[in-house]
Length: 98
Length: 479
Image 1 (cartoon, chains in turn purple, yellow):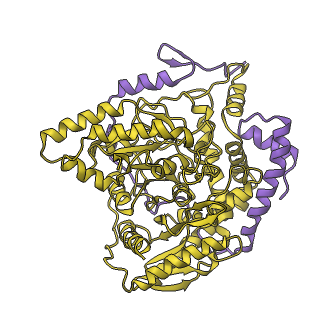
Image 2: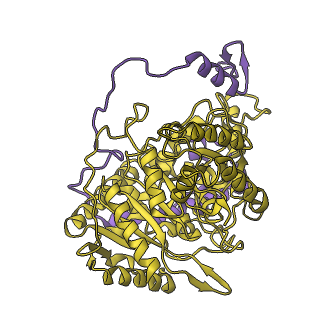
Image 3: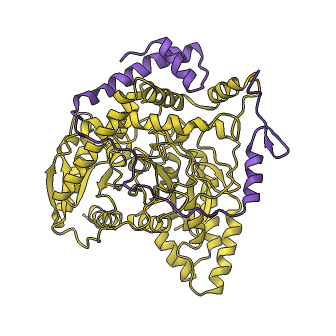
């Protein structure tokens, strides 16, 4: 499967990463090469095989719906302190609507 | 002998017998770091507060009574594991100034065991890489030969242990990131069964594969560290509440060791092959039975891995958007630019590459052909191991196809880089435990380069595998 510039731009948009022209060229080549490499998987007959869904065999691993975390106020402060832009107890973002 | 040259078990005995204090132990480690780490750059940050914690440990030792098992033992922590109040960068510009708001569960456990943290170690950005060359803060050098890489992504932790800049360390392993640097640096590195160690507080890379594990100078030390960090955790639903551990194996006699025939292929450095076969001969002389086995889907493991991991990475790294934490691009004019510019400037090349690959593999129209297909092949790989473990107790192989390579050797071609993990990725895909321990060194130009023997066990066979590795370690060292 070969990737062209249009594909790279589409993927970059989905991934929300701005790429320079040089990067677009580089990724066009590299992604094509890696995708060619993984094409190998088509040699394997997986018609009757159940896909794995993760790393564990546990299912519906639940716990009681009770608060198990402590120091919630301290944690809230730490989370706010980590945000690049805040106003009082809110995290500030750019306008979502125009 | 300087105190930083001890093993954890030796140091714990010395502290217990009051041969030296925890403060003296920590001071020796910090002095070693100050004196030598500029040659290696294993550490991204060193905790000067470690000395104060050592004094607290000494007060507890003075008081006597039952002491926590790792009291006063100095450890280094890979910088993708959160220590509360400290900087945690994941080796990335996008988290260069990020302060951890909580302790990872493994950190809490180690604190309860009385361990002391010396600092955070260098890694490939977001744990993506095989050489630590992808760190946004400069590479780490292999202490055995500083013109070579220490391996990756946990290169800093491996180097710190190899250079006696700590007594043990934690790393993380998604496709070999503990075992391969252990092999390159000549130390022990252990990746536990998936679900045995909590990932809460580990910056996520590929959630169905990531595991935290120990680096140490000996298998017995690694076993001690594993015991301290393992266990179920309410904050990580993939940890098993009560796994059935396999019983220990006390002797190498009659131990059935499987050697996968598919692993001895071109691309395996013949000196590495010789070192591995030599180690296996020694183990055979001790009474073990070496059997050739077949893991028939081996040649597909790397391809499955390089679809599954980038896919999970693209999802896990979507959270780095310049809004709640991390780098925010100040020149962004719109919300969209906050995302696209922050991520463009914050992420390095390999990270972008994997996000792009994963985004593509999961996108509409391609999900079935790539991600779903890879997860099916993954099941076949897992079944290969399950079948093999009906015939053998442990599987042996080289950890890596070559000894440590030189800086810049693999950076031009991503696939060449990915091939470094050819013997390690299948173990993560299957969720089973694997350990690398030093075998014979190989001579390359004037340097003696370490080579790791990888031993792999069945799921929940961690204790058993560590026991076998301890016996193997003795036999390899003594002959």
